[in-house]
Length: 286
Figure 1: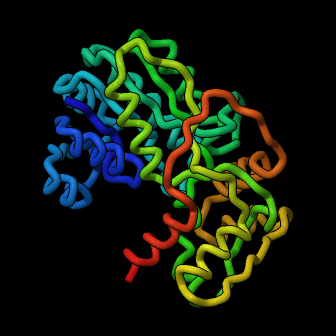
Figure 2: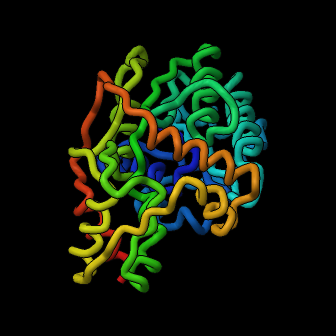
């Protein structure tokens, strides 16, 4: 049995569906049973559990041999760094005595030690905590999620503009949730001792201008990039409902994406292009 923590999110769901298509038994851990209805129809076992309930989560882990771990995102209105660190600490505690033989973690490009840099520092802490415990741990670091643009569909369609904190012509690796899910499933099915660090991205690098062009194609209307200057990033996150600490953390993380480029080894490239992703996004919305 494969356990998927956060299995009703886009990446977790893609991981579960990939495993189910290969005939593997899957248990999806979710905070809301209704969110797992489609996966249950596809053959997954759905278990409602809070990751902060370490005893309950440990009991779920004991029903399987391997687990895919995502750190559930905290509500942006909270101190996201604090809440997500509490989540990861609880998950790691629940692994003790679980009997699992291998875990796979969804981490991120640019993960590094430190404070107040969003996923980059929180997920690095998760990586290190998992390395310090005895269960074999494989880590996949994902590129910039194409789904980060997905929540803008309604606004883009209404205004004809794509808001971007990134410079319009900044080319960065991006990846679709489906490709991250397939990469995670692959690692769950590999031998226990396959634990090398891997990077997962899409077939090409893309710019915000490429994203606008993909929306233009899918919506059959002109979409222009509207770049938000760095001095307005914290203000912009707060307008989206982020708390002050969360806004500052996410702004710092965004700055790191803009300012740093790193040559990577051991990169796995998915098949989903940006245009494929946006086309499906628009199609499903309709």
